[in-house]
Length: 244
Image (tube, rainbow, N blue to C red; front, side, top):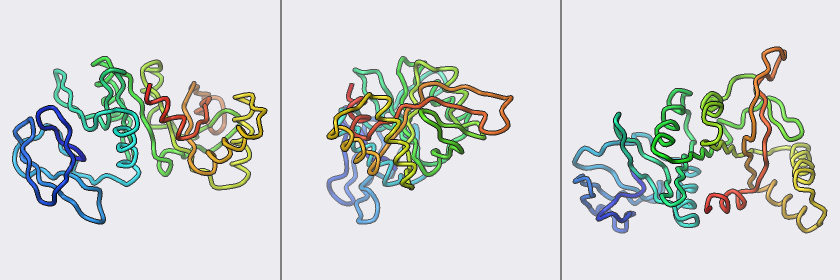
């Protein structure tokens, strides 16, 4: 499936049920427009370089819609190197940024190869991770998170530190965790305004994200050997940053 296809260099979304469009690669796509799944294109004829056989989650498509409509990115952009094609969830040519929105599981090797591909073509890569599978830290301390097992992005982040950005949505559940998050924000940003603090609190209880700022491994520790310094932010702040 594909949210958009490209005809004469312009992105197209389905606007009429069962319509068929031939894209710039000579492939024929059929519009799928139902009530249960996001409107998308299904390949009918041809050999599109990359086909996603898995369906997209609502969380994934929501982020792609934001990146296209609010941030000016083009969706599902194909690029090629000597080894073949890859497809970006969203790409901003002027900013030279690729955003990958990751909901499903991914291996460390696949994560590495995808990141290396885009960096090799001159792009910085931003990964936005779903909280259900990737917010699995086992310890939270002021301004940092710790993992007992090596995160899937760890080695790639260490190698391409200044070319890759790791953003993980934080699934906050308890009042204690919300209170700790707010304390971190007040300290990190030296907040004194009641209005600003209230605004940040709203962001915490609705949607919160954290960026990996630094990562260190401590083999001598008994548990939680993978430690990261993090920066917390609201979803709106993240969107503003992605706009450039």
